[in-house]
Image (cartoon, rainbow, N blue to C red; front, side, top):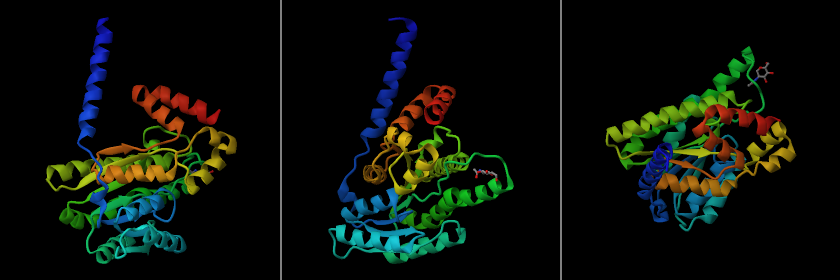
Length: 301
Ligand SMILES: *[C@@H]1O[C@H](CO)[C@@H](O)[C@H](O)[C@H]1NC(C)=O
């Protein structure tokens, strides 16, 4: 074996061992979910809706929030049917995360309704995929709004929830995206917002450890997933034919992966994803420049 090869295999085994050590301690036990007080944002459809069903089935108490009341009502009804506990609490509060001053109401309502808070799942997002950045006034105005929804509301919700999570030694999960790892044209602000939450919650996680709070923070890196919203957006962007070739993941499976990782207090989870996001993320670790070139080739040619 040449010297370079030896070094490479040593590096690889170190990575594998470190990975195994990191994840050997994280075991998911569904019993841990029983009677937990959970708030999920963006819960009227997609991955958030599916997370609500998983949590409900495992006996959690829930508050769901989103913009569309009629959808929230339906999801809450279904949670009640799925719950093994006749006394479980399932409620919703309508909120538009553009209105940052409403984030406090959402937390106050949740804590009142659930009598505390154990798990905060930050999942809502505005996704825009098909507009390039030209630096127009419109772009700047939209950017401010999108950062409010995708970033600042996350910080506000976590901040208002923090005193309650400190009491319960609770858990925070935030949904990030493979977009954070691989730059895709047409997604500048969405991508920036995912970097922003990753940065913010990465530091918050460190501070939680440093202060010995027992509060865990789980980053959930979600790739192409077959939710209504995303399918509609990507159909417009790439066309039906290309979309089929991308092999998007099932939202129910993705939601379960997030629930398990959060409950197990995992550091991060890469959920099942479309084929190309997985490949590009892997390439991105080796050579981001090459991954960028491949992105343009596979998605836009
Ligand atoms: C930026 O503004 C231009 C012109 O107003 C528009 O065509 C484009 O779609 C906008 N891009 C984004 C990301 O909104």
